[in-house]
Length: 258
Image (cartoon, rainbow, N blue to C red; front, side):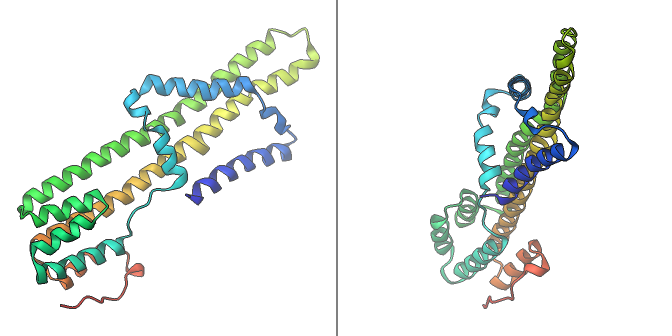
């Protein structure tokens, strides 16, 4: 569970509700089916117009990542894995590396170790793994774009909803008693549009970008580890090389021995 997402969404809803109450506005005014239809339905329609079905099929998976989190190995785990692989390579050769690769459940790490075990040259390993990282970045970028675009559409649709509400309110000026309520209700769509755009959609996009950045950094660490392993680096050299990816405050004392 990604606690920060739950806290953020809950705090955002609470801030608007309590803020309305403190300002003397009736929070029940938010119960406006027409406004929700214009904002949620309109944003969904805009996304269907902006993206292909192939892209939009990722939406449930992206939401799951945002709310449930994305399990990744820690940098320390990767460091210890490659230090261990360097020791194994020294004692068992490529057979030991291949055995470690077969035990891996992470596809990228498995591929990197397999390329080393199969004896491919450094340039080939670098180009293959770097290409995979770039393709992953592009997929992540397109996923985050769905939410950033939703964040652009929602506030504008809120203005559209307000205009529609005002047209309805001003079209019935004979009922003066209900005019004020109708005008207030017209701006609910604007509130929902701005809220969903800047409290939900844009922040969700930013979170996906941050998750992607973290995963890219981990994969580049794996890439460096694979290249060092291919060059025959010792476990001490491997540890020194990969520790550069770990903040000094998070580094553990060296335990590797030749």
